[in-house]
Length: 115
Length: 113
Image 1 (cartoon, helix red, strand yellow):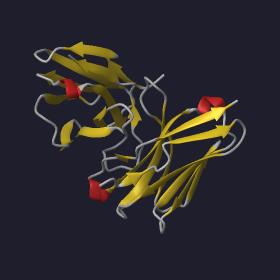
Image 2 (cartoon, helix red, strand yellow; image 1 turned 135 degrees about the vertical axis):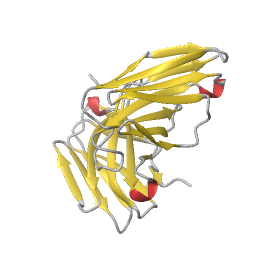
Image 3 (cartoon, rainbow over the protein chains, first blue to last red; image 1 turned 120 degrees about the horizontal axis):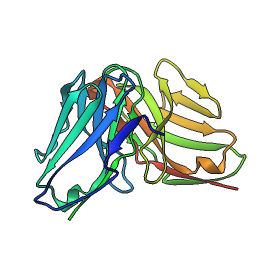
Image 4 (cartoon, rainbow over the protein chains, first blue to last red; image 1 turned 180 degrees about the vertical axis):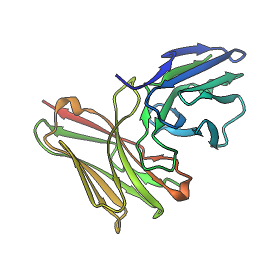
């Protein structure tokens, strides 16, 4: 079982919908990440939160809006997505900050389909 | 510009034999390297890592070797088991990349019984 929990596992949404992806970890990790993975491609970084503050935004379109309510939770709010945004969205966490040499622990992802 | 490359998309190995997965990188600022395994419909699972101050790290059946002069790392799995069949990603991180992980394209390993 993964120690990073993501909900929902699957999500189908229309281009006018608003939805949120949720991620939770209770390992005391202080850095949390959103990655996006398309089929047969490596994960690509979207956002990094370090000590609950946004530290990296990889020029992600504003239709993706991250939120870190506390050190254990990370949300990704979705609005007006495009079909090409369909992908596996992975949450990860790591001990210390993103510059600390500790591995990222990933959740099992949310499979998002935009229709 | 792909900074982390896994040039073999796939590898097939007989059960019990050694699996060797390779990874090359171009950025000399990378100082921390990791290997992840991914099954379908699951997130990547951390396997093993190595800091640039070392040239080898071992954990059970998994050993990672780092050759800094060649900018090359490899993952050895001995002995290979059918349950090792998965996609393997190498990843690198360095101060020059503000701490983010850069992943290779992945190698699909198939271990045949």
